[in-house]
Length: 81
Image 1 (tube, rainbow, N blue to C red):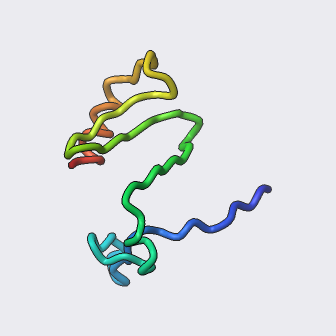
Image 2: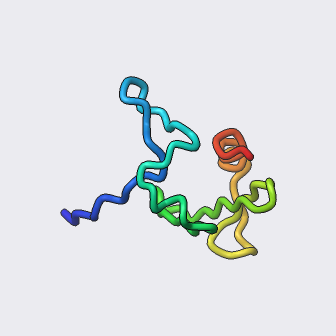
Image 3: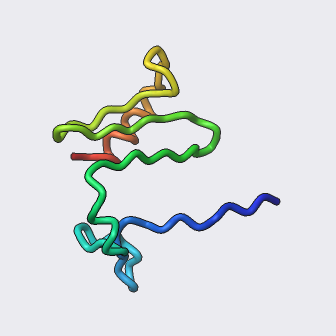
């Protein structure tokens, strides 16, 4: 089994609920970054979630990729501006 290095989360989490505490950075140096590019492959699906100028957009591996309507609905409810 392959072991991957731990990736620090951006924000602290509430110890009881484990929910993210928006605005409470886990490490002070995270506040020095103006722009973040994040990627993670989940269940073999290539999905892009882009947030720019207050707008959230979704895409696949390429601009021509077509996403299933159920997946787009889930993403829309999960990733909001």
